[in-house]
Length: 378
Length: 204
Image 1 (spheres, rainbow over the protein chains, first blue to last red):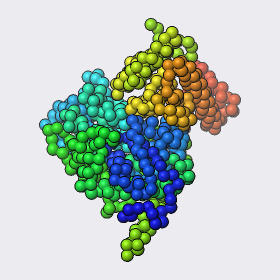
Image 2: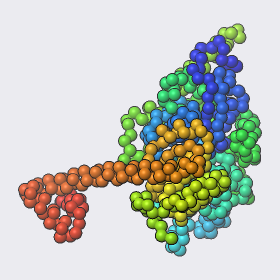
Image 3: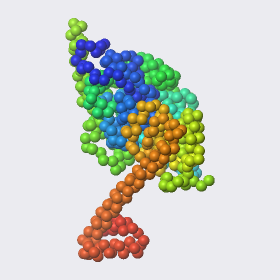
């Protein structure tokens, strides 16, 4: 691995001082690791990580150029380019930062309701959605409010995963209410029964379990195996002006993703993430998902989900590539959620937004660099 | 107190209810003071969370004013995308000066409108402008959907007319009059009659 940017084929970055936006979540690990372990500086970049409180504001700041790049929910670059909920702004992604990482957690009240209605003694995990059917039917018969599930953003895998899980038992948006709640408020609202369940990323599921307020019924890996969760998003226009900066940024973040493959490194990452400037949460809620353990319930053992948070796989070199098929898959999810109704979708949309070519260019540069490194070291 | 809850209240000088989402209670109070003796009435909400949905439901605000750095922004974002709430003007503000640039990037009028830091003296004109802009946007949007609707029904009526002419050997005039008579006799809209005709004649 090259330790310096000098004497290699990587062209000098056009812009060297960057501001990246992130939302404090367990899967913001690649950005935090790249910053803390000096990967950005190895590539000649001086990066400031700016914590954001909402996806909508992160998006608007990226569009306005207040952020040079950002960690985004995988469907967001497509939504931005189409202008869903915003002015159409061409956003591209040259790198998939992580796979999986979300989970569905039920409030303790709903957990008990599911057990009582189905006359069972305990839940078998991952929980099948059909177990909700009796709860929904009883609530309807008794004229009680519908079950309310929360997700984090309209254009998020969380929302589509929740819909998919419910749909596996023929439960539709007619049978339950789906609302958006900021992750930071999720645990409190499970506790106060303002919501009955949620689909959210880490560390919020583990927090709910540790607090005794919820049961993590299943992870997003149980719903969709190895789908992109967070991507690096940046303006197409910014890439055109700063192609070498984008290559350096992509290389540094890919390096961080690869570093995060080893379990001991991930435990170290949990420690870095826990600091106040990042997640401001304790290691005991960050580490479990990072090392492949899904906390389930305060009285139940954790489940082993090795791919709970996946950042890189050396036996599958493709997971960080923003392949078109990934984009097409996300488009099909947006479509089935009714988000593309009446929207004019250009035929080349996915090819414009998902940029495996930039990723491949970055890999080639890295290969060149390795060759040079070995040549120099004799 | 008499307050209308729908967006039509934006059209006149009726009192407008504002839902203010700002964790800075002091700032919220000074904004509230600045709006004394105006048509705006503030319902302040310091720490919202998901109860924001409940609050929006209960208060039925005419305008929502929110700090751009509030995590609750994503809730507002979802009001239109996921739930089927009536659109409302949302005025966003930020204490950071640089966010003024966001102004241009936000879909003007839909419901988002960034104004930089909200100083009490500027509050009223900002709200006036936001309401006016929102009203204008809604009007354009309604006109557009009306036009689309009209085009669609004209197409349906034409289709039904052609089908009648073909299946019943009527002239164009006769077909149109037959449809109009049915519409008048049954108290339906012409394009509803056309739709029914298409589905019945189409299957025969």
